[in-house]
Length: 396
Ligand SMILES: *Cc1c(COP(=O)(O)O)cnc(C)c1O
Image (tube, rainbow, N blue to C red; front, side, top):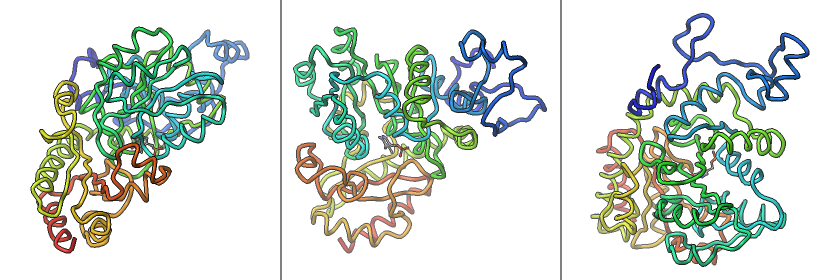
């Protein structure tokens, strides 16, 4: 399609990156192949030397995966994208590509549990130094920068407590240092709500397991950014260092899931705002964390950098986590499971589940309440979600 870049999100998600195929199939075929036939020995050599375009081996690229990648690049306004086996595959492949022993990373105290684990106890074993700070404090960011700082990595809104960081201001600080890349995990917002590359970020990470695929039936990830960076991650971080490649069958499901990306996100956001307001007014609830609430910390930044507020929220109960446990065990429509961005409303307890890599002390340092409950508002009718919570809260 011509001028696809200027089209709306729905149009891009459905048509972006699509190509004609041999039999005129409406939908993208699954090119279920590990390897690709060369016409001649010379051609094989040229492809390996990157002198000629074309496929070689599915760990490097594959036509079905390619189309999913093109959609992601268009949705995030990036030059290129790379599909990965998981969100963690996207994170690790990116870090292994750009870092060496002696380098320094600045990141936030609040991160997705396994990303925290990777930075806190994984990569730090290889001579890479990591500073965990509050990146919403811009002075703290400036102070944390050293001559060997290579990456500033953060989530906004963060998992699990929806902490907001000013992306543009962080990028403006980093611009003064030519070696520093700002990498944003945009999983919670999705490109429907926020486009960090437009705000100056260098690289975007996604867990496509969540809103991008949107059906809770696979694990996948993406990295989006400048072509030069994405090529490097593809040929170092994925090809040689992790092998965390996106499979063509999973890419096909993502392509299918993306067709409803815009309408799903519209509903996730609309319903989450309603649920957040309901919980905010409920006598059993102490505090609600949702970027769409005017009293959410960073709401001024939210208005500046987010187009909508996303489908996930968190809250604390007045009677602490014992009451939270009762809630988790009493809900009926809301499903007790980790993950987010699926059609089903999912409820979980970060401190004992997704964020269990954090010790008690680390939770405290990150300002994460032990009783925090995370809710991914699904696509059921919002009245039914609210009714389910209301009934279950009676016992809390
Ligand atoms: C789930 C999640 C990840 C990890 O993604 P996987 O696909 O489960 O590997 C990374 N970052 C955030 C913010 C997440 O929510």
